[in-house]
Image (cartoon, rainbow, N blue to C red; front, side):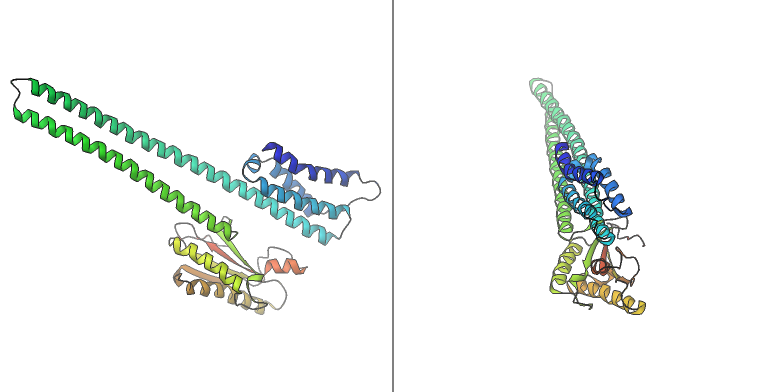
Length: 327
């Protein structure tokens, strides 16, 4: 795995060397590009990235190489920053994927240890029950061979043996039930992770965030496109299969237009997502909606691509307690 990371790093190292060694033309650089290169080195030095996110690291490496090439070609700072931003986002995604999968591995290992302790405990109980049964059987044989033993004592020994057998069976049943419950919990968690992956969900401090981008709405409208409805259906399935979770739809726009228009559009779009989820069977009291207009942009508003990124609806899923941290 370390060799794989080295291979990913090689085109970046070569690109940086070429940038530094150019003698006829000094390559451009920007603060954002420098930060992105620093972020890349930090990700490269993170052991979890090599183990859990090599593909994401490869994509980040390729994106940074494109930004470096733009700097070498002395493209506009706007283009360099746009490419550097894309690379920076991919690097951040790489770090997040590594962090998430590392945590999942820790949880899985913890679950295995807990299940093993339970199994050991059940096994010990079963062995103790078997020993008790053997002792009861020995006592019964002695009672049978003893002339002065009464029939009552023999019956009591038989009863003790039966109780021991029942205790052994009960211990085995408990072990099987514990294993079944653990498997069901793991399967449910795996299914949720797969569904969230299809929705390109991200884990944040506020909860799990699913983004409905501008392309999922009709142009300059609050009505969801057919693709937007398809994504909404997947989200509705997640909410119906996890009834303990709540959802908050937050709408945002770019800075084009008046504040009043943008605020109204952001509210209409977040309400549209809420209505779609309700129409797909999710109880209305589990979904809240809110519009923020052009506040909280995730990119600049200088280019069409940057404005497109800012036109969005973010769905925040609560934790199992139903709580969502405020913005």
